[in-house]
Image 1 (tube, helix red, strand yellow):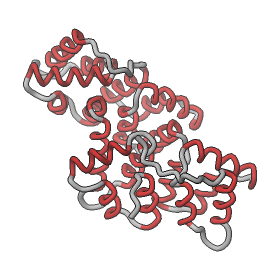
Image 2 (cartoon, rainbow, N blue to C red; image 1 turned 90 degrees about the vertical axis):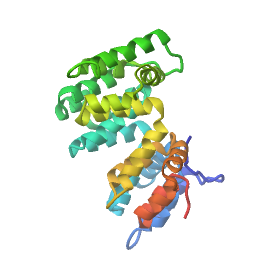
Image 3 (spheres, rainbow, N blue to C red; image 1 turned 180 degrees about the horizontal axis):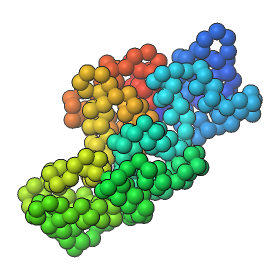
Length: 314
C-alpha cells in the first residue's frame, strides 16, 4: 500500500507546470513550493506535469529541477520524477557507477519477476546497455551467477506451492551446505533463482522444521560477501518484504551519520508500492516510528520531502 498523499481537489497538470515555473523564476528557487507540489503527485500526474512543462516552456522539467535544487533533495526529487521502472533502472545504474554493489543487489533481488522484466527494458532504453552487461562488468563469481540467474528467469508470482518440491529443496540445501565440508553454491543459486516467493518461504519453513535451524542462518554460515547478501535479500523478501525494507532503513540511519543514498532509494522506490506496511514493520521492530527516525536524521526541505512521501507531516 502506498503512503502518497494526493490532495482530493487536485490542480491540473498544466497549473502545476505553471506553478513550478513561477517557483523557479527570480532570484533563488521557491523550494518549499516545488516540494509541496511534487511530493503530492502520483507517477501518472508527474508524467503529465513533465509533458505540460515541456510543451509550455520548451524545457525538460528534470533538467530545470537539477539546476534549481541541490544536494540530497535534488537526488531524491530527480529519482522521484521517474515512473517505478525508471526509478529502479536509475537506482541500479547509479549504484553500479559508484561500485555500490550492495545497493544494486538490493534493488535487483527485492523485485518481483514482472517488476524486473519492466525495469530491464527501462534500463536498456535509458542507458543504452543491457542490465545483464552491467552485471557482467561489475560483479564476479557466485554473486554474478545469482544476479544473472535471478533476472533471467520468469518465476511464478502466485500463492500456490508444490509441497513435494518444498521438502526436496530443503533437503537439497542442507546437503549442499551444512551437511558437507564446503558448500555447493550452485544448488543455492538454482533454488533461490528458480523458486517463487511463496515456494521459497515454504522451503525456509520446512528447513527450520526438519533441521531445527533457520535457513537464513545456514546461508550466513555457508556463504559470504555480496553472494550472501543477494541470497539473504531474496529469502527475506520471499518471507516478508516490508520487514526486510524496515531493517534496511534502520541500518541506513542508526549509528553515527546516515546513509542518505540508501534512505533515498528505499523511501522513493517503495512509497507507491508498500511503504504503509514498511512503516508498520519499522515501528514493530524498533519501537519508534519511521517518521520520527527520518525527522531526527534529516533536515530542511529534504526532510519535508521524505516525510511527505511516507505520509508523515511534522
